[in-house]
Amino acid sequence: MCHGFFRWLNANETPPKLTESFGTCKDVANNLRVEDGKAIFELYGAGSEGRVSFIYDGEQVTERNAGLDGISKVANPYDPEAWIGEHPWIYFAAPENEAFLTDLLGWELLDQLRFYGVGSEFTEDEGWVVGRLCQQSQCNTNKLVVAISKSTAMPYIAYKHWKHEEWRFIGDAPEKMPNSVRGYLAEG
Image (cartoon, rainbow, N blue to C red; front, side):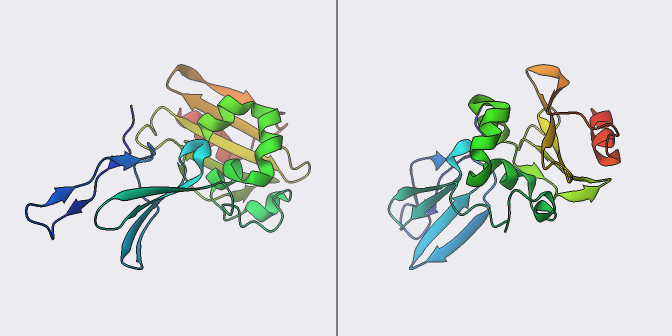
């Protein structure tokens, strides 16, 4: 099921005119702005499509795909502390991390986790940089937590999807689970 399709309504015409449907399955716009008389509706977190813009000129909608380029503004993506204050989705979408995460997760799982776009910023917790995400409109069933070790820069990822009820884990489990990770797993 795909929630994120939209239509522009031009109410200046008689009768009002609707455009064709457009979208990426991401049902929340990250940015809506007007440039040169055109409305630009920008979406992030659309899986591996990356950043997608839909430009409405009053007549039709044109799609422009910027991909994953320019998403990460982290100075050094290999330094766990550089991610503190950043959104965890960017960690999974950053082009600099794509080869590493594909090796760790496989392409299909990485692409699936890139749809988990709702979350909190990375914070520091007991020697780890921790962030959590869920999938828009399915936050009760599709969620994940990522903890990046400050000593090894390796992630420990726990994720849950509606197709299976149990948490699944990737990476080496820490000897002492950070409290924030333990708490999130306990929430179910």
